[in-house]
Length: 173
Image 1 (cartoon, rainbow, N blue to C red):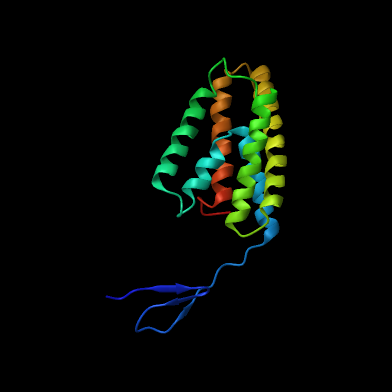
Image 2: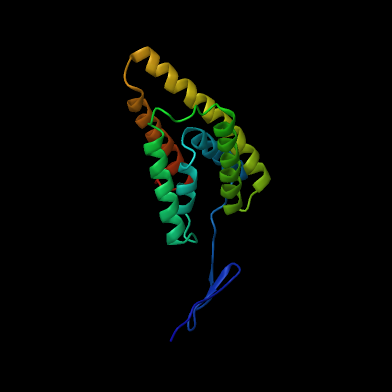
């Protein structure tokens, strides 16, 4: 029975010459920019980064992927309900900042970059995304007269589109 042995930078397969592992070069600035973008996504939809980070990682368990998927889907539904608190209220705003920090830190940690720098970028992005999302939803609803639920669905799509590009679930990054 052949077994594969993996050591730092090299794979050893019995009967074959050692194979060097060539990892793509990672620009830390690109990763920090992605952490900020993931924070912006958090400001739009707080559970979207969690589900995208879970689903884009091979080391995440199926149970965690399922749970984050359920939570994200629940948020997409609950967000449209009229009794939901304003995202700029203290509790929701601080929650988005915390999740933005966590998302940015996890993304940077995945690429062996500074988790602290990632958390900072994530929290700044979350603040920006939260405020921009609030302004967008209020402005387009008031200007167009189109029901808010339509604009909320568009916001869902924008958050998902940006987030999938950031975590690498789409081809072009």
